[in-house]
Image (cartoon, rainbow, N blue to C red; front, side):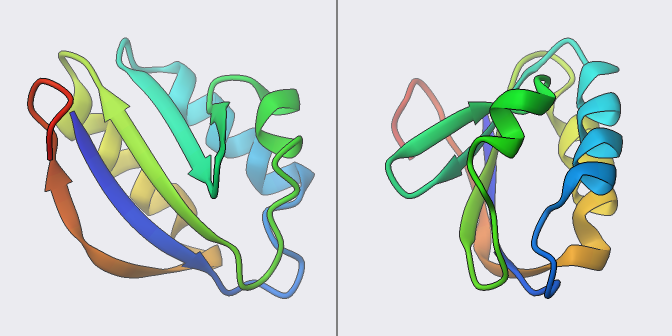
Length: 99
């Protein structure tokens, strides 16, 4: 499992059109993809779940990916988010639920 933390920098936050592209990209992978915002989590393969987080400018999020193609998914999804976020912290590899 891998995790990357981001700060949303787009004044519109993560609105419907880029969120839909993100969901389409996430859906290409077998890995579980989750967006974490504070205490809330969303299945990143569900547009309604992702939009339900109401991600605005200044929101801190974590992108978590777990599965056989996690590295490829993290790369593709980070590229998809790039225009809307600034990376914060470092990439973490989580093994057995412990980071």
